[in-house]
Image (tube, rainbow, N blue to C red; front, side, top):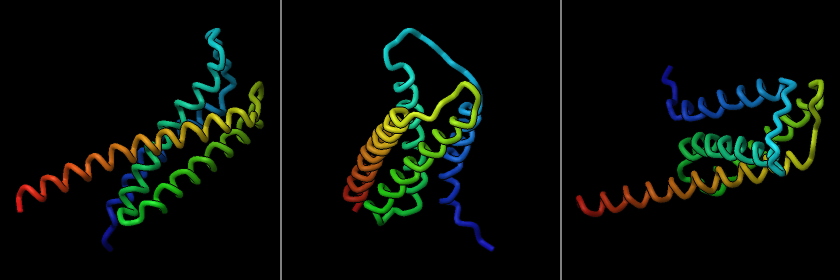
Length: 133
């Protein structure tokens, strides 16, 4: 049986999700005295996740740009919601809809960054192909 190696592009996202849920299961409360520090941490954490999810979807659905973006966003939103619900079960943690909004915006930024880099790479490849033919 031949294994489709493009599914390996999801491994970084899966490992990162494991890290997110591991850290969410801890009763940490980091205070840096920075206004909205917590929302910024959520945003950054999920921007990385959005980028990694896009990696998997873009390389598995190369001819379907809307579907790969939609699935990246939907998967990231779902993971953010599940993470917030998970935090509600952890002592000294809470489920906060504002954190989920930060998660959503982070996923969208990570997706946008990946998409821009992907388009730039595709453009370079097309230019190389046109130069060699």
